[in-house]
Length: 118
Image 1 (cartoon, one colour):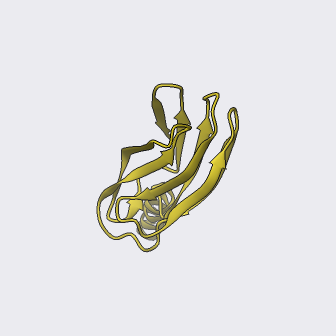
Image 2 (spheres, rainbow, N blue to C red):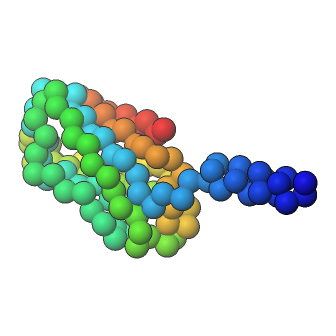
């Protein structure tokens, strides 16, 4: 009986932990202008998602691998607007190289950038 209780406890602990070393990233362009040179990465900058451009009203989805990350840090989004200005936003948090969430959704708006994590 003790073995069954221990195995049940072990299964519960393992199934509740997030062992994934990646995070799903969605970036939506909710402006009326094309944004270019988009980069999404962690603050350790081990892997970088790069997109040439994102047209108005469109979105892109990709998985950011975090296997090489080892420290605590945040996520970084950088892109170039229609006037050639580089916009950068640091947001979110990961611990010991592992994401705390499974998905991060970025919405580029006319005058702000919204971040939602799941």
